[in-house]
Length: 321
Ligand code: NAD
Image 1: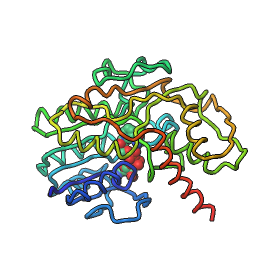
Image 2 (image 1 turned 180 degrees about the horizontal axis):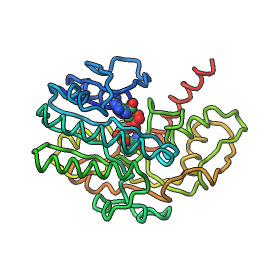
Image 3 (image 1 turned 90 degrees about the horizontal axis):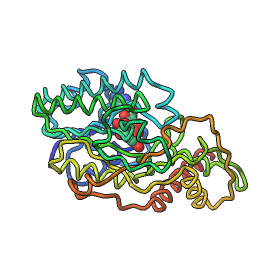
Image 4 (image 1 turned 45 degrees about the vertical axis):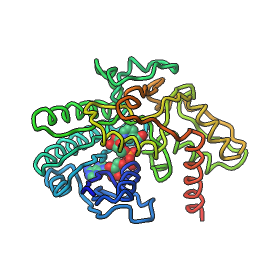
């Protein structure tokens, strides 16, 4: 049994990860500045409310921990990360710099950092039929958001801590993780959750809005696969960044079709071409994850969306009461 810190454990991926680690018998300290509260059970051994932009808070969080999973970040979907630059860069640089430093001070054994597909350069994602992105494609750098630049910088900062202080670092680049108990309203939600919410709220025969012309493409990875990918990476000897995602490319219209089908409603679509839509196409090459971690996603998009839609529908119904 290890003593494990999960930061960002009040949020989506962190809460699922903490639950899995606790189920495996570890002592799990969950840290966040706020708690989404979607999970009803006590999914961590200990809970601390801390603002990790401060070095003192990071020292308190990492004290006595064997491993750290650092998922805390000021982040959101495309609408959020295209409109908020300074706060995202400021908060995340502080969290990550202090967390790395605190991990050294408290002699943490292994350190996980949650990076993002947003590190990849815009010039490799200019059309919907994009070539799947390999890890080495991140350079020469040209991420399309401040959020992506910060993630890329922190990857390098973690590499420096590994070289200079011997910190045992693992870095995952997540590609559009979705599933139940994730943000689905309020402006930080991502496309799968937003579309599920719109379909759940719409009356039969109604209309849902889709950002962009619907031809932009992405790949989507279900939360359970993401958690198993993180655990496989942490158990591996792979010290360089690895894609954790899916390599099934889908257009946003295709995604909407699937969700509308699951809802069982007849819904028409209105495209908002002026709304933020990010890069034109993005897909993950999973060769490294397969060969170095022996990991690949198992949950189909159909299965994952069904579970996500059902959960969001139940939330929408609860609120309507
Ligand atoms: P999330 O927003 O649900 O979780 C992030 C958590 O960090 C939130 O609960 C938030 O309160 C917490 N946090 C923010 N500022 C903090 C602070 N100052 N101190 C303490 N906690 C703070 O997001 P998520 O989807 O669970 O993402 C987890 C990690 O994975 C993030 O680092 C994110 O950048 C990364 N990521 C996620 C995706 C995805 O598709 N969900 C894709 C790429 C990368």
